[in-house]
Image (cartoon, rainbow, N blue to C red; front, top):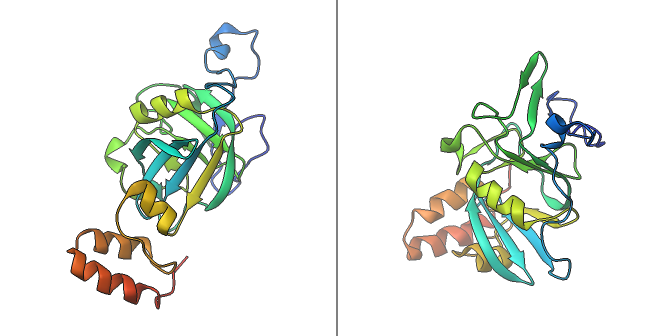
Length: 214
């Protein structure tokens, strides 16, 4: 995806999100949002766990909210690392070569867009809520519309977003469950969730000898 006016293009997909840059036009300005959405003294950031397929909003180290998400499919995995929110758009317009979808129920990116400072990736809504909990996106973090609308009200430009592809002690404290080794894949994490505690311990010990396929 790409946000117009921001240098975060992903040329392979050819997707973009229309940004409203001309505030003098009422029909366009309704899709823009003020930069600040929470008090500046509050230190908050977003943590995404790809194995858990969940997103958490933390403030001063405390977990405020946890949401289910969809992550990138095997062919288009979500990026991992430390990012920042650089764009906030309400009711974005979706563009694909030959296709323009205005805000509404049919919009593939839903009702909100939080753009990250990496190759056009972002956190956004969806018109396919049943995909939440799956590895189904083109790399973006996908949320249910009512969930991202709540998150959208809480975050501001510059807030950090940490996307984690491994399940360690920090992630386990935030989202609960077992601590898994660095070589534990998403598929292995799903198997562990369905196993009794005794089996989880044995499987997690073996996971350290398995290479991650990227």
